Amino acid sequence: MSMDFAPPKYAQVMTAIQQRIRDGEYAPGDMLPSETQLVREFGVGRTTVVRALQTLAMQGWIEREHGRGSFVKGRPESPAERVRPGLSTAEHPENAENIVSVARVPAPRHVAKLMGVDERTPVIARHRVIRQGDRVSAAETLWFPLEIALGTDLDKPAPLRHGVRQHLQAVKHLRIDHVTERLTARKPTKEEAELLGSSSPVLGVLATVHDPAGSVLLVLSVALPGDLHELEDVYQVS
Amino acid sequence: MSMDFAPPKYAQVMTAIQQRIRDGEYAPGDMLPSETQLVREFGVGRTTVVRALQTLAMQGWIEREHGRGSFVKGRPESPAERVRPGLSTAEHPENAENIVSVARVPAPRHVAKLMGVDERTPVIARHRVIRQGDRVSAAETLWFPLEIALGTDLDKPAPLRHGVRQHLQAVKHLRIDHVTERLTARKPTKEEAELLGSSSPVLGVLATVHDPAGSVLLVLSVALPGDLHELEDVYQVS
DNA sequence: CTTGCCCACTCGTCCGCACAAGTCACCGAG
DNA sequence: CTCGGTGACTTGTGCGGACGAGTGGGCAAG
Image (cartoon, rainbow over all chains, first blue to last red; front, side):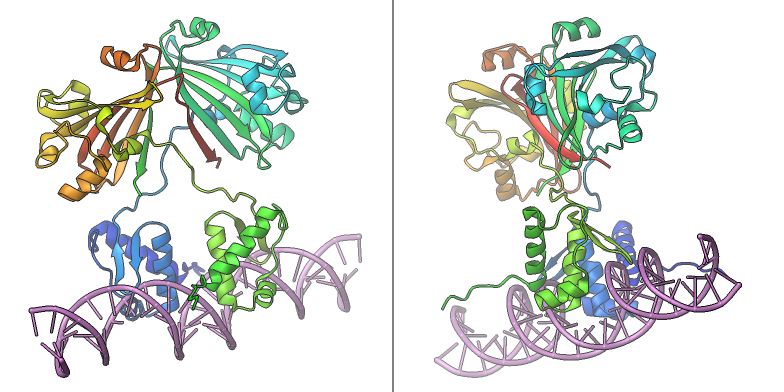
């Protein structure tokens, strides 16, 4: 027995229409067949056709105008592919030559502010570098509240082979839910300049990494030399 | 007569549930009342309740598990609110003190490359500044291919009161469809430094603005002083 | 105790029908 | 010619009913 699963009918209708749009059979700006016609063509109820069309509209494939018809919008493409320096920093596996130093230090003002703690509260600072060939292509600092680092290897200078995100998940079941990034252009700090071997402008990324409840799991600060990095972003208008 | 419009019932159900999630009456992880219960509570058909719940699920408010129930996902927040320097530059209304100069010049190498034309092809360069109090907070250059600027006021130094996007739409029916931005940190050029009154690092935004067919309508280059600008971005993980 | 079945409950999908409301072409009255 | 009405066509919303399928607890047989 084959026991294949047929996808739901509304999905079949959606797929068929998407295919016709991709093939150019329905070109951008064209009016789609009316609901009634589609009902006849696919041999399904209007409910089903309407559900397919409304879903396609929500996904941006078509536009529906009350009283006029449904029209191909011609933009299959969807959300956006952004570079996320914050997230990739939290996921990057470490090895010995990435680690510069790991120490318990009083929180600097801007970090304390983002964590919502007092300025001199001790935190774990994990300094790392990313190498590209023989140049250092990024200088990163990850700041952890003590209670997060407690019981983990985050405060130890040994490299985390599976990255910070994995480690937090595996050891303390902490899940990263969302990240807030702040991007600016600045001069590197003295320490960064030394690591990078240059004091030309850097892209500064200051990110807070949150769990589902909104608590700050870590704060991270990345310095990306401007001559090595370009962050690209494509987005639809309106 | 008041003649108010009641929103559709499914939208009313959605709003009610969203409100309860925001109020914490339904906390993240909680199971929502079953469809049958909601049908009784709101006095509507199951079709309506299901539509509301499925829409909420698509928007990320809740999760639905076949055979188990609907559960609060606890992330009301949606796609992402990004600052779009490229788009806002194209939409910003101009006035006399924004315009620095407008000229026909040979395309610089990087602009020509992005437009897909030869390096010395003549283009229109429109230099502008944005002021914030008495400081210049951004130096912008908009590059237009001649055939785009033809018949428009883009090549005239008079300010465009409704912004470039509106002007293109109104005069030549050109619609902006998507924008590709490239962000980096760099030193300001001599001209930019002069306008900005400083040569400290700037965020450089180099964007191409496309019509629905993908043709480049304009290229724009913006210099944002690092000490004045911070681009913030929040995104969900996974 | 363990195993397996049954049943109540949940969501998933689909149908036919009904009415409201927006759009547009046509046509006749003025 | 212009104006307004009419009707065919479109999408928007809503209902009730039906069946399928996944989940989990209770219960009886082993």
